[in-house]
Length: 369
Image (cartoon, rainbow, N blue to C red; front, side, top):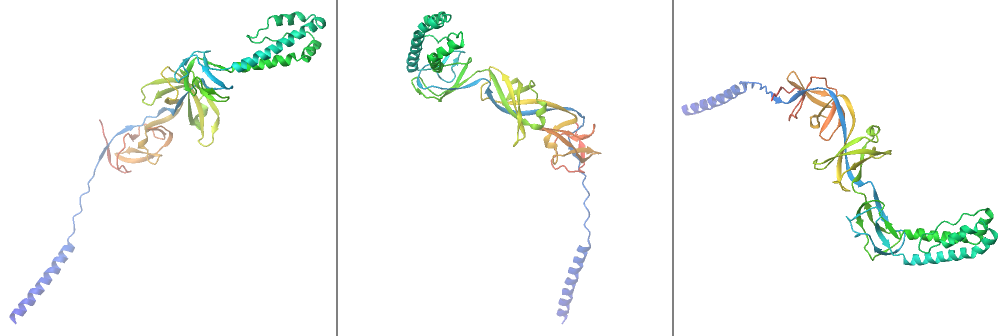
């Protein structure tokens, strides 16, 4: 009996100890951690509003200003050229680019000239009798007539009756038939319209050339045009004659161009306008890719900052009493890496470098280098 009583008292003691300990644990209050006040060092600079120059950037490929696509208007065998008809070959102005065989046309021309000559000779006796005042002119024309030289203009009739008389003998018809063949004969010899370089050659000597066939391309080196598309809002600022700075992709070489044409039509889809810039240089080549910087206008009371500093495109972080705050700004013009904004008062401390995790109310200290 005594053992049973001791066991019951031990169990009760354990239960009472368990609940007492649990009550003490629940009633114990955890100490509040001390608030950590962190201060982040940031880079900032005072705002100084000035007149910011808006420079429009555009790019494009160079196209030769004087460029000719060579086509044939006649058919025949490509006989020869003044030089090797190959890309990169230089021709002086007036030199033969292509000569097409014209033996058949020359024979036809001589036959037509012979017919005209015979008709004028048969006309001379009647002119001596009916129009003696005009006979010396026609007689001299016959004596100077040449089968190998270009046909000279016919003598002018002295009266309307003489004109009708000559027309009735089909002299004018024969004359214009010859002139037509002479004009066609010229097209068998294609000459360089200016001193330049052949950039494309599509035929070789001995090949059959057909009427309307493209034979190559010929350009004048040293003078090129750069076509760029610019926003329509700045179209009225780009006048003919304005100077433009150009540079290559590596930004190692620079050239100075000049606006020579501005398209009067606006592209409805892109709302841009075409601007043509002329540039000269011996190092330039057709097809070269260049970047252009056009100085459009100045925006007063603005500041230029890194585009990465913008928050939601219309806000910037500023420092007020060692605390970050968001200030509303008006973006005026976006460049490739920077943005021109308006709306900050002079002297306002604006962040000059991006702060990761920045938020309004963040305590900061301006870092001084």
